[in-house]
Amino acid sequence: MHILIVEDELGIVQFLKQGLQEEGYQVTTANDGSKGFELVQDQKFDLILLDWMLPKINGLDLCKAIRIKDQITPIIFLTAKDTVQETIEGLKAGANDYIKKPFSFEELVERIKVHFRNKIKTEVLTLGNITIDLSKHIVSKDAEEISLTQREFELLTYLIQNKGKVCTRNQILRDVWEINFEYDTGVIDVFMNAIRKKLNLKIEEDYIKTIRGIGYIAND
Image (spheres, rainbow, N blue to C red):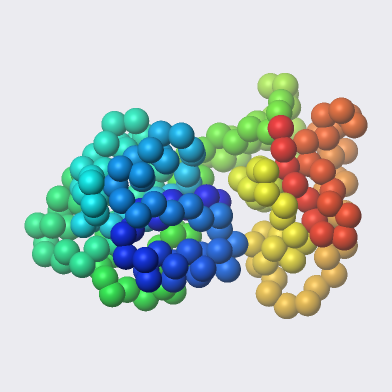
């Protein structure tokens, strides 16, 4: 998952970037509203953390500008502005959430996870000729529906959501199996073999590559 931080306080930027990267997120930063606007025009982000008081373009105007083009990506305001009216203004501008400074990093991470869960409920994911409709819980290849078990579905979804990124076996155990202790990672290989067999993937269209000794990466 790729998060954009638009914040002009260097200390907060460094703190958030390091913490979120340790949580496994890809992070891009911008220190003013103009740069933030440029980035959202050129790249796709899964979530945006947005300060209100920014140089060049303030956070409120930037939020409105983003929403003209993008109605889906979650936006969380991080701001010292804390009146009820200001909160309402932020939400009316298109923000999904509003966290007042100073804030707990642990709370922020949990809020981010909630927004990611809500976001993927309506998404359709694609990988080559493979499609996952998350709202209907349907996997198809070339428009033909493929029957997967719940765990196979969750594993395939996770890899596609992290397309282009190497997912280690330990990360998969933590995020898909919710196992945070030492466990036999070979179980993942068993499920991957089953997924490949059910999808009838030929060598030239094996969109999920095994990174020997590390994990897997999904790429179109």
